[in-house]
Length: 372
Ligand SMILES: [Zn+2]
Image (cartoon, rainbow, N blue to C red; front, side, top):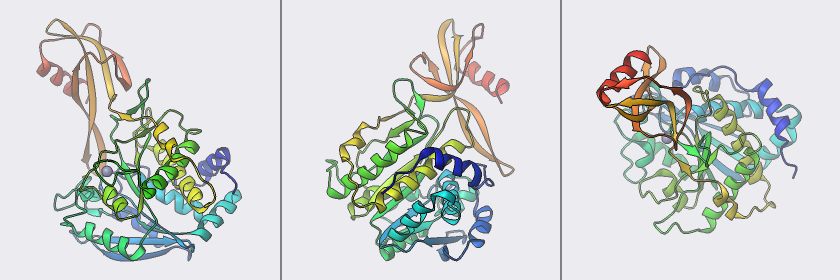
């Protein structure tokens, strides 16, 4: 099968992607109108309610024999995946010159989506659900109604592939230049020994395909998460149950606090993944997955270099804390590190020559007063 021309897809995206809903704060109420207005090819169904009784939906499209299950905003404040999914819906509604791709995928696959699994967390802009449960650590206990709903759909659909969509913090970096990790992947382990089961190898192949495609768009900005086995994590358990589960973490790129770049990359990753899955004869060497560099934690929002604290040289490392205020996310600077940060990179690097502080408290007060 034909490969996607990244230039053609980029130009489709520039013109046709969903241009509304650009804020990080994305609630059920904001999303609902998009689900209500879809054409016949998209079947939307309410499957239940969250703890605080907000609707949870499935959205199904395609007519193929390979079942895919994709869910977003399992962590309520991680909305980039939902916005990428809205772009994906636009693509399958109006693919333009890429209709060969759209019709091929829809012929081969049936795509089941749960857009916004955690609408209460989305409303409150929290990772957890309204009961304080992290849905991504609740797969065994199933204390949350949202976890039970996800597994009900999993059982009914019996997907061959799952896409588990998240956002990662700005702190994650890739490679020797500490570029921000705009996108990170994981093929979760099924046991402590990180066994390369046939299913896990297949998950790795899909990720390797996505990575190869996206290196053209965001070279050197894609990372790979540790595959340490997490016994209570959703992906690890779904993979263990035989569903090839691809974790995508949308992240930062320089200056892009709305994550527009990560949204575009996530959309393209999903599309290339679906193209690869639909093209059964194509076999990538799964070892290529290991060529993706490890995610590191060497990126900060701001570094202020060359200050003095108690007469000693230091750099100030600042991370933004996201706070929901009047329906908008405010990025509040907070001191994360006070040490030599020459091994780090940041969105903004400032020269603090001449700044003289007595102690950490003094630094924190200054940041609070000057940078807020
Ligand atoms: Zn998450």
